[in-house]
Structures are given as structure tokens and as C-alpha cells.
Amino acid sequence: MTILIIEDDLEMLFLLRQDLEAQGFRVITATNGLEGLRAFHQQQPSLCIIDVGLPIMDGRTLCQRIREVSTVPILIMTGRAVTEKDIAQALDLGADEYVLKPLRLVEFVARVRALLRRSKLTGMLQPQAVNGYADSYLSVDLSSRIVRVRGEEVRLTPTEFKLLSIFIRNPGSILTFSQLLEQVWGAEYIRENHYPRIYVSHLRRKIEPNAKEPTYIQNEYGIGYRFHSHLEAQT
Image (cartoon, rainbow, N blue to C red; front, side, top):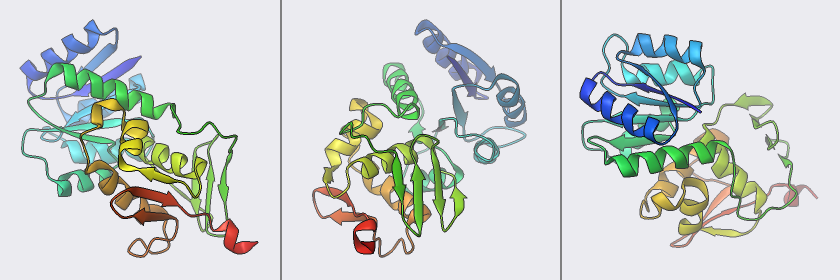
């Protein structure tokens, strides 16, 4: 499995590459955004790790360029304090994850593995034989991973699609914050209590008719969320 790291701090780049290669990954590297974009097109990696402050082409622009043509998992790194606004902005660009440097290498590898697992859509809460969901407004094909709103395809990141697929496979069920953290992000994220709220908010902006008054992904205050099927109202 190939991982692309784009980082202009050579010491950081060496440490990350060394640690990932020790775990059996094939690692390719680049030290600026343009070089990273070329490496992405040439190597087609399974995961991209991008520093925000890259020369020539910054990490945010690089993330956007990759997301325009691929659903590959993207992890963004930054050297400054991470706020919820930063995470939301990274999601807008198409990133799946946003982490703060310097990184603890054990945690870093764990998050890389969790991100790769999410991209494979494993570990659903209930293994129901559900192929997708479709009503007059929203359609989701779980096998092809295609989401359409009003007939127009909507691009979701691997994490967003994993989150939506779990909701669709569990219609009407309350999914708690801890269940979502464990099943979408993995056990490594069990303390990241703000993640479900941020990611659900962003997903709503892509699939809801009105994100401020959601009708599909509904709050269960203090507990979690519930997916409401509009098919019930049509029958």
C-alpha cells in the first residue's frame, strides 16, 4: 500500500517516512505542492498526507486539486493550533483528517491506519443487506459510492461517505456519539467528542435541502443522531 507525504520540513519528512516504512507501507515523498501533485498523478497512492504550509503550491490548494479528481483519503497537517473552524475549512477543501504537528509517531500511524480502514467502508454497525437509499431528492448507491442530490452527483470524502452509509444502514436507529466515533473513525478517536458534530454539520451542507433545518440526519440531543427516511412519508 502506497502513501504519499508532501512536507517541506526535511526532518519531519524523514521521521514520518521512516516510521511508515517500518510498518510495511511503501512511501513516496515530495517537498512542495507542485511536486506533490505530480507524484500523486504518477503514483496513485492509497493515502495522501499534506502539510498546510507548502512552497510553490500550498497544502490547501493541493488538497483541492487532488479532491477534484479522486476520493483518496487525505490527511492535512499543520504546525499551528487546530480549531473547529480549521477542521471545517479543511473539510470544505475535501480533507478527511486534520492533525497538529509535532506528531506523536505512534498516534500518527494509528490515525493513518484508521483513515485507510474508513476508506474501505469496513465495520458497519449492523450488517444489513442494504444497497442504498433513494427518494425524489437524495439517492445513495452504497456499492458504487455515488451520491446524488436532485439528480446531480455530489462528491463526498471517504469519511463523509462512511458516515452517511452508517446512517443509511441504520434508518430510524439512534446512533450515539461513541458509536459513531468507534465505527467511523476508529477506537483511536474515542475521545474526539467534537468530531461527530463537525462532520455531521458538514455532511448536512452537502445532502440536506436546508442544512439549518435538517430532515435526514436529525439530532437526538445529548445522545447522537438518527437518520430519517423520507420514503416513509411517500408511502
